[in-house]
Image 1 (cartoon, rainbow, N blue to C red):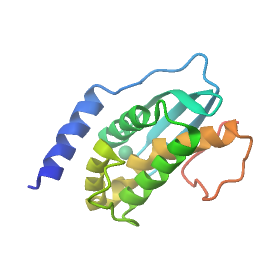
Image 2 (image 1 turned 30 degrees about the vertical axis):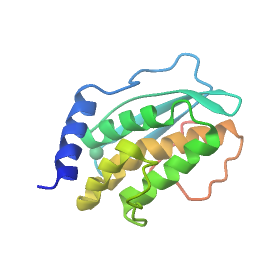
Image 3 (image 1 turned 90 degrees about the vertical axis):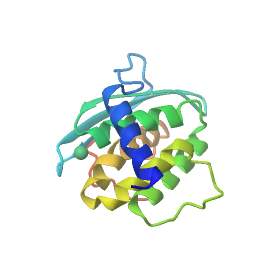
Image 4 (image 1 turned 90 degrees about the horizontal axis):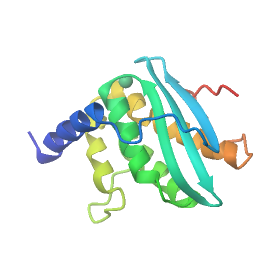
Length: 160
Ligand code: ZN
């Protein structure tokens, strides 16, 4: 068992039991729903934008441990970032989890998020790990009034 796998398991367990920013946001600027039919994970991601800064992020929903832990990590990682920084983080995270890009070992920009590399070993769980991130992008796209997205979000069902 490698260290990263051990860390991965412990972090998933901790965030699943004790998710960060797990609440509906009353004064959200925007929100977006996501649904992963393969596993049954459901999420609603809320963002509060102060001009360019995502000054609050939260989520509600139900699903498996990987989904909930990933959403919890996502809110912690994104809060306080500018929208540009947030999108950059989303892109890096999705690339890492999907295995399309190998993280540079000297690049610590994903920090604790790099534990989600472990999801690569379970292809059926990739959609669980990415669901909240797609919903976050969806919410930011709404904020910018641009319904056109660079990549189709097949698993995200918008309620608007
Ligand atoms: Zn799941």
